[in-house]
Length: 326
Image (cartoon, rainbow, N blue to C red; front, side, top):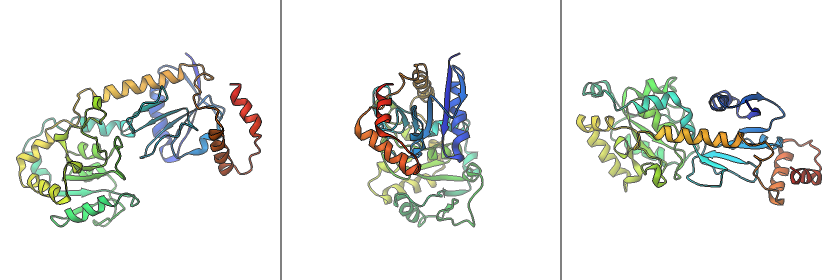
């Protein structure tokens, strides 16, 4: 098997989780050596430690951000964009295998008994308060109808944050699932966690969430959740929620709908993702390099290096020559 020297440069709290996912795919095809002198670095979008490594860089984006192709060679993210062989859309929620499996089965074996099990109205689980204030405005307005239980660290009203999100959500009919911001394609694990708990997600974020993946959307079944993008006002959306809350048949209809428009949604994405990685690592490491040699890009790397490593002594001319001779 071809030997690959690899380095993960990630935040400590996600390094094992993300690296295990990648290694599970890559190690089927290559012999992996974790090295401090790697041929390839896999990193996060906000971790500029990547510029320390003079090799091919692969960035995985977990937030509503755009990849900077001046400092990375390949990127994995939320956006529906095409850029030669350097980018693939593979949102971070695909790494939540257990959650996705539960979400995929949420429409099976439902009966009216489940309506009796959902003893509480709606939950709201948020720890990060630095986001678009639309979600707290909606939280406040919906709370005028019935109490919305906030189980996160932000706006907590149940005596403290919950330890098990799925167990907590299982008791509720609805879950407020707002992204931190709204951009086409930006779709995180939040809505899938609500699906996995067999609640109806009240969603805001990805403006094209219900378009098919063949039409530039995220392929989520519009009959399975409440999409705030489809309502002119909060009042219209809340009136719709009231109808569902008061009608067990309507509630059960939502639960009985599958999550994805296409049955093979996950298979399509994961097959493309594996091919994307294989195409990168099957090349000679010298040929996998993609970012250019322009003065602008070199200036970016220089600034990042000096901010991260203030004592570095780098000869920019030799650095430039080294790039040209790759």
